[in-house]
Length: 401
Image (spheres, rainbow, N blue to C red):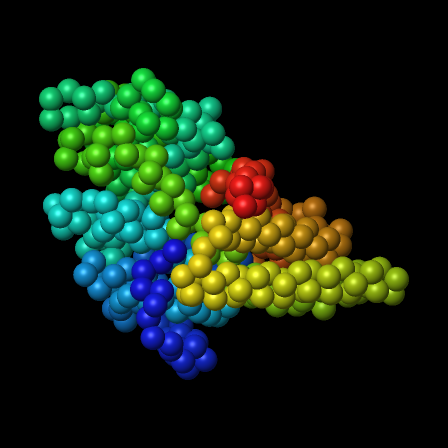
């Protein structure tokens, strides 16, 4: 699944302690406050943390050394991601380091590697992903964004949907249709695009949580150099599957769930007076089930990592973790909303832009910080491949034996 899974065994407990100390000493206190209290993170929060990791050699560390990484095993990468999240570090924005980087060092030309890998590792160039379209989400192979060859350029016309953080991005890696003949998967190519190119425009999409995470991106006669084609023309589907397998590998996001469980328990304690003894007993039973489900998810993830480290891949592990991780997350956030009592219906996105969030004295402010997670968790069963599609992948693989 990841580079150098046959690396020598390392002292995981010692490494986790090293990660904890690094987060304590190097995470900006303002960013830590935001993460711990459910306050909206700006681009600068992510960039600042990623640059701190780069100085330590821990950003892109799962890349091979030949590409600028550290050859971390899948176990070491997981330990780092989980421990960092538990201790309130922001997530690593994946579009460059986890998605495009491995594509480029696996499929790109030397010129493409020289042009782009350094900017990804230094977080000086921000990438977004152009995959989904209005009628090509779960059925990604139905995408229609046209790229017509015109001399040394492709001319792009069409649109991409749900382009998360395109409004922050300098560049996009995207799938386009270069051929309409044959099977629909055969006519797809993988291109790199400068977001400042004339003809590119972005319309913001404000989601149910009241936040501008994502966008619709339009392409009107956008000219892009043929040299920005990654791999051969028509090889985009192969590259897309490679990229998506990496997206789902750690999508169970267990470190954030462990930290969230502590936040939920704090909410239960704060709001105990809002419930009568019978309600509190039922609440305790429900919380126990959630904690048991999270413990089981942690064990499942560990088992898959052990298998991947041993060189075994049943072809469904990433899909299983994606589905189960989403189910556990949504159960957790539904409980968190209910644990707010009558304040669970309170949500004001503006209260997440500053202030104390979960640490506020006012229960309605705390509720907004917690309820955000409930609203945002709805999309987890959609992005990274819908849970329904992942279940089909699991079933097909098991039926084939």
